Length: 304
Image 1 (spheres, rainbow, N blue to C red):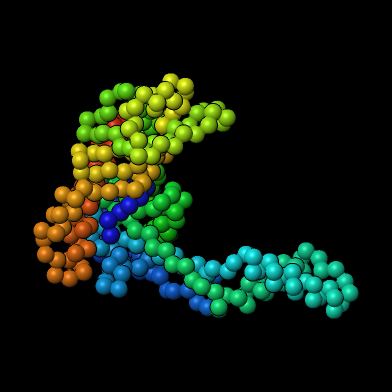
Image 2 (spheres, helix red, strand yellow):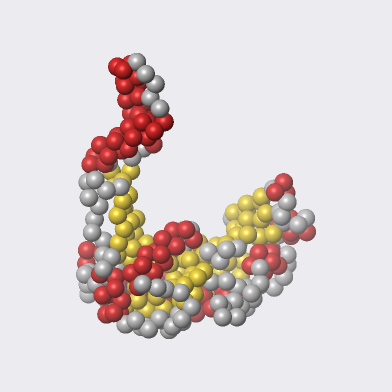
C-alpha cells in the first residue's frame, strides 16, 4: 500500500475528529456496490480491503481512508452504431425523419438496455489524514482524481476546509535554477529526468530521460528561455520522485533501506503488515514533504 503519486491538501482548521467519529461519518456513505441498472457508484471501503471492516484505519495520529468508484463501461462506438441502426429502422418503417430529440431518447433507451451486460471498472483511491500536521495526502495520479476523494470526504463530514498546498515562490523557477548549475537545496540531488517548456507556445518542449541533468546541453535550453516543469529529484538517498510544477509528486519510490525495515519486522497477519507499511511510509513522508516545500520557498498557508 505504499503510495506512488501524491496530491497534497492543507486543512484550513485542525482536524479534531477521532478515528471512531470519522468512522461513523464515513459509514453514511459506505460503498454499496453498483446495481445492474446504475451507471456508477461511489463510496468508502475498508483500506484493508477484504481483510478489514473499518473504514478509518488509524496509527500514530494518522488515519487512512479509501474511496471506491465503480463505473459501467459502455463503448461509445457500440452505442453510436446501435443508435444509427435503430434510427434507420424507424425511418424505413415509418417513412419519416427521426429528429434530434427522438434520437436522444433512443440513445438513452439503448444505454439502459446495455447496462445489465456492461463491464464494471472499479478504482480505489487511498488517502491519509495527518491530524498532527493538518494535512491530507492523497495517492492519485492527477489533481482531478484527488478532488473526487476530497469532495466525497467533504460530503461525508458535512464541511471540510481543504485546499491544494501552495508555495510562496513559483516552483518552475526553483526547479529551473537546479538545472542551470545552481546548487540544489540541502538534502536534494538531481535525478535523470526533466521536462522543459518555453513560455512561448511555439518554443517547443524538451523531454529528457535517463540523462545527466547537469550536462551543458540542459543548461543551454535554460539559457534559451526554457523552464523546468517536471524534475526528477532524490532526497537524502531515501526517497526519489518526479516533481511537477503544480506540486504533484509522481513515481514516488522509497529506498531499499526503508523497505528493509519492513522485512526486519515480522507481521503476523495482513492487518499488522498494513499498519507497519502505513507507519513506515507516513513517518518518512512526514520528513520528506516539509523539506520539499521548504526547498520551493516555503508553504503559503491559507491564513497568510
